[in-house]
Amino acid sequence: MKTTSTLRRAGIALLAATILTALPTTGASAATAATAATAGTAAAPSRGGDTGWRGAWAASPQPATAPFAPNWSTAGFDDQTVRQTVRVTAGGTRARIELTNRYGSTPLRITGATVARTAEGGAVRPGTVRALTFGGHGSVTVPAGGTLLSDGVPFRTGALESVTVTLYLAGPTGPATFHHLAGATSYRAAGDHRADVAGTAFTETSSSWYYLSGVEVSGGPHTVRRDGIVAFGDSITDGVGATPDADARYPDELAERLAAAGSPRAVLNHGIGGNEVTNDVAWAGEKGISRFEKDVLTEKGVGTVILLEGLNDIGGSGPSFPGGPTPEVSVERLIAGHRTLIRQAHAHGLKVIGATLTPVKGSAYFTPGNEAKREAFNAWVRTSGAYDGIVDFERAVADPTDPDRLLPAYDSGDHLHPDDAGYRAMAQALDLDAL
Image 1 (cartoon, rainbow, N blue to C red):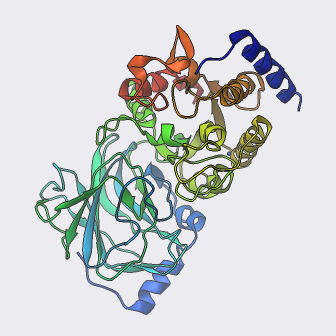
Image 2: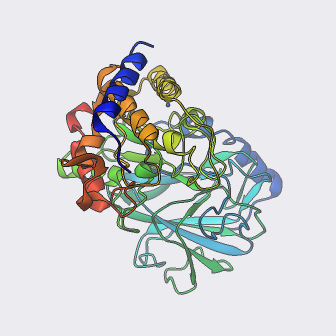
Image 3: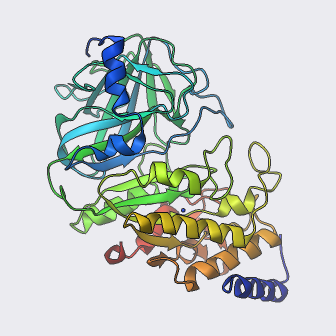
C-alpha cells in the first residue's frame, strides 16, 4: 500500500511536534507442602529473600490459551512429566528454578522436579540429574495465583549453557500457566520420568514452556554485581521469526555479544508475542504497564531494561489481529504508557534504554494511519530525552531504499518480524557500554 510521501511526512512532523509538547523425590504431606508454598506465594518476596542469587533465564507467564494451534495449556497435565530446555545467560555454582501458577484457578501440585545438563532431544547428560526440593521437601503445592522458588542445588553452569528442567505432575492440574511462543521444544511423557537420562519416553512435543518462569544462579562471577539486563516487549523481543531451538532472538544475540566481548551478563527475555503496552490481550497477557512490576521489577541482579513495545498497540485495532481487534491507541496514549514504564523502572533504580519500533510496510499492520503513528512515536523516542539511552532498531533493520520496510535479508517472511540475521543486526545496534 502506497501513500503520498510529502503529505504523509508533513502529517507525521505535525503529529510529532504536537506530541513533543504534550513500562525424584517423595511427596511431602499436604500441610507441609502448603507451608512451603505459602512462603513464596507472591513473586516479589520469593525472589527477594536470599542474597547472592541473580536471574539467569526468564519467561513471562501467560494464561492458558491456544489462539494459533493446540498446545498443552488448555487441558493441563495429569500423571505426566514435562521436560523443558532453556539456555542460561549467567553462570554460577548453584541453581534454583522459579515455578508459577499466576493464572491458575486452583492450587498446582508439583510431585517432583529435577535439573540436568541438556543432551539431544529430550535426553539429558548422564550423571548430571539433580533432584530439586522446596523448603526441604520433594513435592510442593503452588497456590492459585502464586509463584515460588525451589531450594538451591549445587549445579555448576556457564554463561550460554543449556539446562533441562523436568517436572512430574501426578494429578490433574487444570489449565496451565505457560509461555506460549517459546521458540523452543518442550517434551512430555506419560507417567513419572523426571529422573530419566534417555529421552525415549518423551514422545510428545510442544513449542511452549509450562509453569517454568525462571532459573536463578548463585556463586561464580558477578555474584554481587547488579549488571543483568531485561529485554521487555512483544513478539519481536520474544523472537517470533527466529529459527526454533537456535537461541537466535535478539536478546540471545545480545548475550552472545557480551560473552564474546569478555563481559558476560545475564540477559532476561520478558517479551510476549502479541502483548501491548496499554491494552490487555486475552491470548497475549496483561498490558505492559501492569505486568512490568511482576515480570521485571522482581528480577534479581538486574540494572538495565530495554523497552521495545508498541507495534501491537498501533496495529492491534485492525481486523487482522488474532482474536479480534483491541481498542485503538493514540500515539499520546502509547507515549504515556512508556512514561509509566520508565517511572516504574527508575523507582527501582533501573537504567532504561528506549527502542524505536521496527518497520512494518508490507505487513498486515501497515496502513497510512498506522505508519504515521509509528513514525511519530519513533520521533519521540529519538528526541524526547525520556530514556537514559536509546537504540535505533528501526534504522538497524530497515531497507535503505525503502526505510518503512524491513531489509529483505532481515525479513522472516511476514514483513513484520525479523529473521535470525535481523535479530543479530538488532543486537549489534546496541551500545554495550551504554547498557
